[in-house]
Image 1 (cartoon, rainbow, N blue to C red):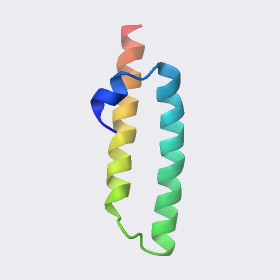
Image 2 (image 1 turned 120 degrees about the vertical axis):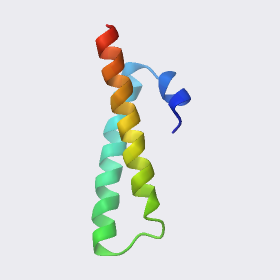
Image 3 (image 1 turned 180 degrees about the vertical axis):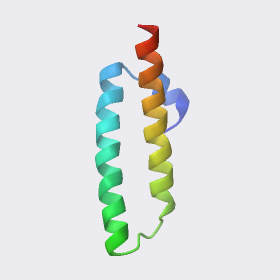
Image 4 (image 1 turned 180 degrees about the horizontal axis):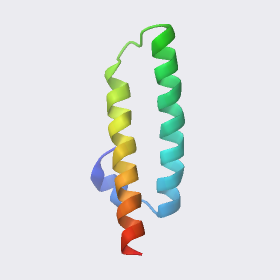
Length: 64
């Protein structure tokens, strides 16, 4: 997910996406520990997306 897309989301959508992404990353990491993923770089991309979502939420809290 790109930063432009994230800035257009509402606060509720940001929180929902953050929860979903966090759960998805936890499952991917567990799966990767048991048997290697076909593309382990997906974990890295998802981790960065979570960081972007958290950054946008923090920025909006400071502005409010």
